[in-house]
Image (cartoon, rainbow, N blue to C red; front, side, top):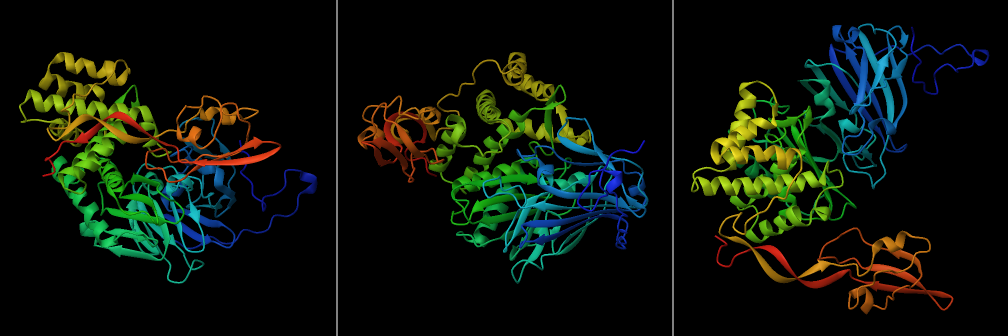
Length: 555
């Protein structure tokens, strides 16, 4: 039975009475066997034309197309326009599968011939959407395949041709992707690897070579690109030494590895990063320095080559995010400090960001904020316990290496949580091994950290510090009518003239939530038939218990 088609404006109308003779389809291009992805930016229209061609015996076996349903919170199908699927004989009808898994699946209405072609347009994402989505302007294109590539489903690697046609961008533009630098790159990959890749076009600069992990830079950053390349390479080399060289299992095992970095205007203090198969992508504000926080973010994504990439822990068929993300949080700062890419003060600040103030520390696309925090706390507690029990002879490093080696030996990525439990029981006793399931899988109990959990140079110290304090109940701004409730006496809001019960005509509250806020809150309150603007910095000085470096421990 033929399935109904996804139609675009050129499709025959549904009403037979109004049907017109279909225009003949243009001939398909002559292409080599394999999978070709062709991207043509149209900045004047705010779209990218996408062509995907599967040529050869694999095309005739194709039954389904897929695109990510909600990768990093983005529904890839939402930005697609005018999807048409065809082969040499004509249009192929499709129907969306009822499967509600992580991918949207289109089922083909008939078997294709030896050339399957999928064409559509992708609308550029709004500026406030995560940087992983496809973004386009006159100067550049960037995006992650998960968010805009509708690909045939196939498990085996195929010859791949990634073609980027940047001619409509500003002069001097060229293309690059996770598969290499250039407007036309050949590789061998699965459709899943094509989805799990970065695609760039614009005025690119390249540092280093494929053999030493090159940096591909798009944009005009405030930081020194060569120094940044050296920083990332150093962190990467340290992780390779720690976990035993490049991963022998997982998605990032074949070919070279690249750092794709986009200096994005208007991104401010924010940044987004992700491990993407044969590369990692990092989007950072054009005006932001490559500071300690960004260095740790880069080390975090590199740690995923092993933790979550070469080995994942699963329970009941579900990935345990506390391991993939939380352990990577732990190792990112640990490696950065050991390599002196950050200082002790930066390390202590990251402990606060990721172990205490998690709500304001994680990227918007984080899969589970609680899992990040609990995983990082558990990794730190386990690391400290192993060092103490072995008198410094063993650490968490040994357990993670053992998991990576086992995954490689068994030629698979997913291991049961019990694999880690067995290692813990061997080193710390059966009770600690059983605790893993109760605390981390089932989520019971609290994870406590001793004051010396991070070594003799760090402790919990009472100190006066600037902290974020709005000074009233922010939820009161969302009610109708909006009026100030829960005003804190003596707060910056109260000192600026805000009063309990004041009617709010308009408000502007900055997104940044830390003690270094430099953007004021602006609130217009009703005042004698008019409006009065009140401005203040949402900051207060409080005595807090913070992770801090000890004096005389800088070396």
